[in-house]
Image 1 (tube, each protein chain N blue to C red):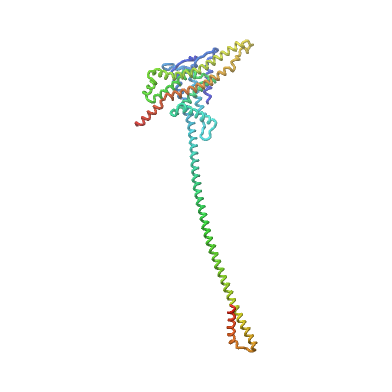
Image 2: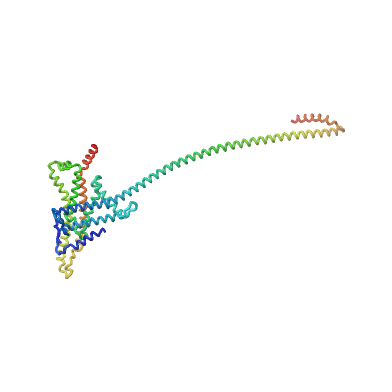
Length: 168
Length: 278
């Protein structure tokens, strides 16, 4: 088997070698660079998606927080409002109760006073009657005869009334 | 599948290589010749080995890209992505944004050159030490350079030879032609000289052993002790280091020549003018 010279120039061999390089270029482009780049692009897309989602979630969370805070503040003001009105109501009610109680107490006191007055009047009348009886009896005993009670009663009554007036 | 073509190459080499005792520095073996116009086309070891390299790289690509996914990358995929991104970064740094699509081409240049040179590691004839092979690559680079120079129109292209002063035009033409020639010869010469020096050193060491230890009795006198280890050091330099370095240099020069040859500003101005007219 013969071999070529150390330096030999052959136009066809040069062309073949040129085509070889072109073929390898196409092979690398199609089978190495394209798949890798596709994968890299896919990964970039996934990362971008994740990032976008995260940003969206963050903004969502922020807005949700804001609305919750607003709601909370509204609820707080409402609660304080309710407490205030309740306080007012309670005050009004307690005032009413106290005034009612006072009125009732006054009534009771007045009744008691009336009762006491009546009792006194009754007692006075009774005492008067008894005194009249006793004085009539005494006078009967003193005069040893029964006096015309009707006549004398009038007289005694006026007398006792005078005493009562002096006492009053 | 990746190593199969290489094994075929070795088998072919072993089957076709004539046994010889002499040290011989020659070109690639010619497997057969085709009758073509202008020149006959010999199908040599360098052609066949190049094809084996291409097939190997093709299956390597298939293996590397098989089952890659965007979500859970394996270690293989990490390495692959790193390599691809390194290559694109290199192209972007050296050639600029406009030539971004050049990354696979530069990768092809590097891979083909490096793997071709590294074929010596398995004992095959490196296609890069055949002038025709690297000349073909350099020719393609020259075509690319000229294509991008032509982007601004033929008038602009011809004018560029009269730069900076018109009477230097012949020199400019020479330098234009010298670019691919120098690229081809640099690569080819480096790889070939590496093999030549390796062969010479190995032979020299054999002779040296014969002189120094030839008096030893029997088998010991015949055994080339000095050939153990020392050629391996040279092989590390010439086959691995030099092979990869030449591949890198070839790729770098391709990038620089194509990128610097392209009058980007003029082209953009032209595009703008066209856009304004339309």
